Image 1 (spheres, rainbow, N blue to C red):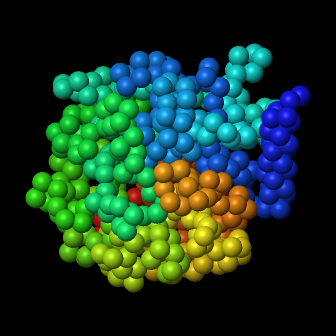
Image 2: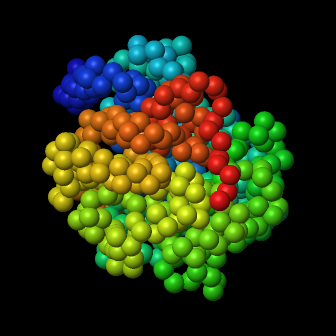
Length: 460
């Protein structure tokens, strides 16, 4: 075996020892979540034959990665090789293998140097390999019928209204850039603006501001061809609006889409809005426009790290006011319908983050207790260290896997302490049932007594 292959095998063996050690140390965390978190933080590689073979026009049999808001990759498009030209799948589903994995949906984050590799076995069936060992069978998302139909202007449904979470969520990034711009304003882990630039540079369609009528037309196609009603929720989101877009402030800009969707498709989907933490009067407009769930993301709990990592948000709003607005919004939507996200892992990013897992977990737990004591249940996205961001460039390996596994245990303990359960609008909870693909917090929830998802509470 050559030196490079020997090194790769040694690294893979080390990774196998790591995940099996954490499975043994944290038996209350589903084994599926250990592997899923490792894939989300470090990415996966693909054999060329395992790529989707699909295009923008809905051709092919596999749903391709849509790049719905961020790149969620460990390289730029020019660095990804075949994966940039022949798209990988949007997600994969893992089952079986030596760990007897229950059905686990994982968002695809491409990393050509990852020790995890998706490739066909001798029998031609796809598997996930680590250290040369097949650790899971891999299923690919089928191309949905609605992706095979175009809007009247020729745009694809995938460009205007892509679906993720195995078809559960329609992701409407209606503003593809952020008005927090430049090193002194952009969040230090966020590549939304670079993702826009790289897709435009590659000549890919990537609409900056999606007209309301295009969104409605795409939703009509989804509603018509999604005969199984798999799509259950939509998210309205995009970059922050610090001034105006088309004469509208942030609440009216995003709110106009919610209003149009709810008028055209009353009750068809659970409507969610991801926006800044806005003043209560603006939040009331979101509610009045018909949104059911509000995500005013708090990003990172620690005060010093918030100021360093979110300089635009600190400058325009400030951490304390941001948190006050989140609690105020619970008076409008009801606490259970306010679900702020944080980016799990940036707490440990060098050179400013915590240097021990204990410190990082203690800080994050403080934030969970703060919000949960008010009935607000945060959720989190596992940090992908995209290389064009300052934190991604300085921390290509992301946060330690132990941090992510302990966070899952801490998160569940916080829910139990405050007598709360999984937030609405994220699909079914529990290992083998969850579809939320960008972290394992839903996979780690206890299986409910029945098979139904928690209902969205009535609007306040």
